[in-house]
Image (cartoon, rainbow, N blue to C red; front, side, top):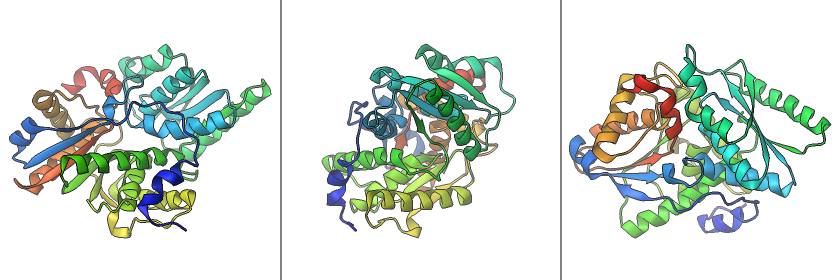
Length: 342
């Protein structure tokens, strides 16, 4: 069992990978936002600048899922997510880029939505990218959503296709989390080059692959900076359990001892209410501040809520603090919310 972070590049080479991203993504200062909030220094890792179909964190995860799909000679991708899922949009884009068919299943996670929500943003791009769209009536049934993907896959096999399922529930191996171990290696190198050591790193925490992969990778590299997950779907207690399990699953997948201790798993849910995909005033204010101070576009579901938590952490850190924000993208979802954002 390996435990040294120096093994990471060699370990990851054992996993097939479809290169979809233009990496590294930028690591930038946010001086005007820092001045406005009284922080010492604010940094942002711009995974919204990843190159495929308006960018986002899921590009990194898809490199490993689709690497396995191509290795298995699959010709069709199946994925499930919320109606305005960034993951689904990027899976459709990646499939188009690689010459694969794509079937996407959209789950009803957000209540009382309007036509704009159903037709604009990521849904518009899903259609433009040529994905076949299926509906799933439940929004909090990960196992059921995965089972229904299996039904769709069976119907495709009956027609002679070779489908590959990108699963949702945490009972499956965390292949996508490997993309954020790569991101951790990239970030650690950028921080060395900039000669900066942040006091905290804040990242949106939803499905858990991004948060767990980043935390696992940084700890394996010996980086001890606190990684704070900003909850966007579940409360902190539930999400803490999910991230801890995910980190153990990553260790099992990589056949190495987990470098993540119990105290390393940190979550905040101060910007979560009233729930997934629903706007609140701190999120709206954070999105406005990021746009008007730094020209940064955030979405109401992930990056906006995480920025609200980030700014709360900034307020607690004081003038000597250096904080780093992971911008996971999600820009198209903004257009599904229209005037509610303003």
